[in-house]
Image 1 (cartoon, one colour):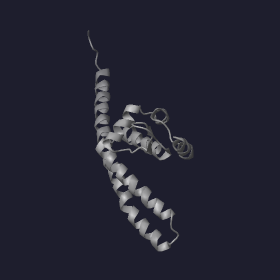
Image 2: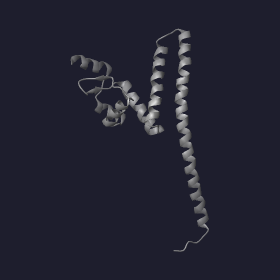
Image 3: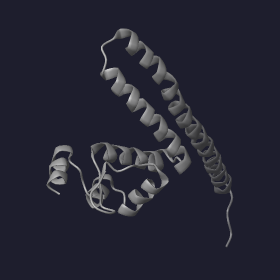
Image 4: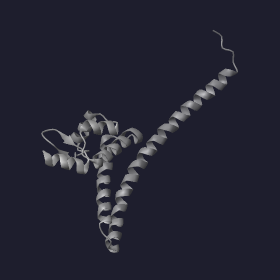
Length: 156
């Protein structure tokens, strides 16, 4: 148990309630994301007691952004997170070497990963822009009707 306390201090492991507060997610949502495989907690203390580190909090914040701001489905979030994992791994490899040839290889490998992320976000943006255009058209029709009706007397 002392080992866990030392580990918790060294890596700043947090309980689910604290993580929920920091991220603005509910503990239930965090557990659900774990069930779906979107998140693996940094540690399990005893039984079902999970502990989360800064990387987990960053990942949960990204999940929340992708869900709330971008409007991705859980399947799309899973796809995006797969690219995030690959991107982070390649970045760690890049930072761990000073060999210019190896670094060039890693840069070449990260380009398709980033392209996949951009493509996913562009598809979502295109869909949102199409929906926005439909709503602008509806609004314009209402404005046109208001203009037409201004010239007429409407009797009760």
